[in-house]
Length: 107
Image: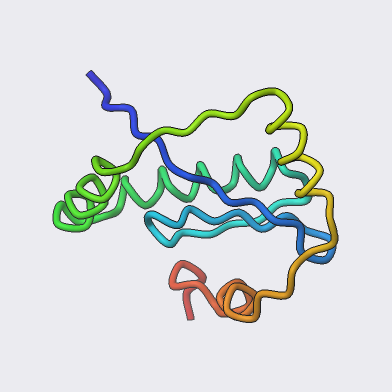
């Protein structure tokens, strides 16, 4: 049976794109919409687990096993969506990370 893992997705609007980050694994992606950023982050996480060594996977699962699930009311969800539409915060470290060449890009 396939094990289901839950991750945190932080999605912020930055310029014309939405940047998504999984803080537990320090994996980031982006998209033109919130849905696309989330889908791209999901794909990046799937690729991580497909290619990660057993040591990396075990370390990630150990971190996740200590995570607690939080849920939002409809009002909290609406407020969360409003925050996503707010002007983007300037996060130099994330901008630098997303502008660097990926190890998957080749030479």
